[in-house]
Amino acid sequence: MGKLKIHSAEVANEISKWTRVISQNDLEKSAVYKEKIQNLLKNTDEDREVLLYYQLVDGRHEMLLGNIEKANQIMKSVGTLDEKADDIINFYFYFYKGQYAAYVKKYDEAISFYKIAEQRLKRVNEDLEVGTFHHKVASIYYELKQNFISINHIKKAIDTFKAHEEYTAQAIDSLILHASNCIDLFQFDEAEKKYKEALEKSKRINNEVLIGKCYHNLAVLYYAKHDYEKSAHYAKKGMGIQIHRDNSHYYIQSLYVLANALVHLGDQEAIDIRQNEIDELKPNGVVLVDVLLKDGTELKQCLLFSVKDGIGSHALTDTYIAREMLTQEDEVYLQQVNEELGDFAGNIETSDIDEYSVSYTNENVK
Image 1 (cartoon, helix red, strand yellow):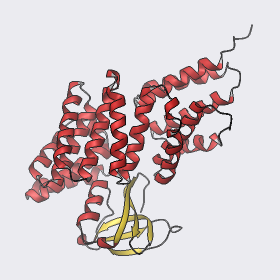
Image 2 (image 1 turned 135 degrees about the horizontal axis):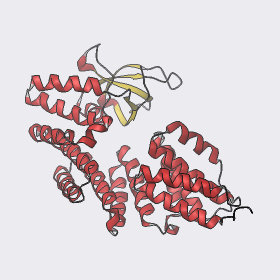
Image 3 (image 1 turned 60 degrees about the horizontal axis):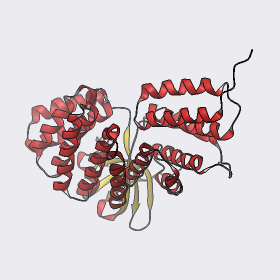
Image 4 (image 1 turned 90 degrees about the vertical axis):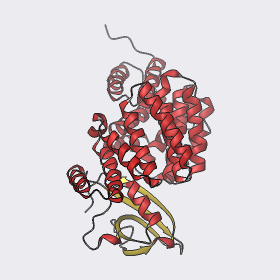
């Protein structure tokens, strides 16, 4: 006797649960749900909407794991959306497409997808997804330095998460993003208040990832305020957390802030020690900058160098230092890495830059 067929609605319900654990960044549970749903699909009558729902969430799962090539294959296989698809599938289709576009740094595409998804947001009954949507959108606008739009969305995310005790970590993470927007707006006192509130709440729930994130961001804040002693203090505290050390990209960010704070404090021996650690931990990745000059010239995918360092300088591998250089130095050296986009290499006066965006790539660029 054959196995009983499972109704597609049951599978859709399990996929909905899968989206929740992904929104909570729970890698282990996400893998368990994926296997469970794959087994359910083997005994389910084909339902195009449920299969599409599965593909979209699977793509999001691979993004969570950092498997960019696999995520790319899945999202390409999704194809187009059936005009008859209901509003919930419409929402997830455009929301996840937007997340993938953001994941590969195609921010304009991501915003377009998010705007379409937002039109269906009122049909989404899961608050975790609503809050996650606003956090993702806020993150995009933060990267583009459209801070007021970012803050508008992050406030909605915080309000949504705060209504549920089980989403405390998500609310704290959103509060950190709000504070980071405040730094860009030179609202340093407000940023400090929010970071310390986030730190206190992170300690209360004993979330070391968020505690480390708060320490790192406080180090960035005090560096921006030219309080280099406090900047070094918080950078060291963040680096002392094991889970922070295990995340080499995040750890190296704190090392850079610490090294630069120590430069201002004149501690040369400590600077040398930290620089050696940076050289050992430095991932195979660099900052890439897209620049729009005031004369309309676009320079995309450029390595960024400091002209102060001379010919032997290295391409920057830290987004914070890149932004600082573009706003505080009079001149920088840019070199395009993709010949299809251009072959510019030379000095640019920062006063000639109208707009810029900074991204980080893990691909080894020589």
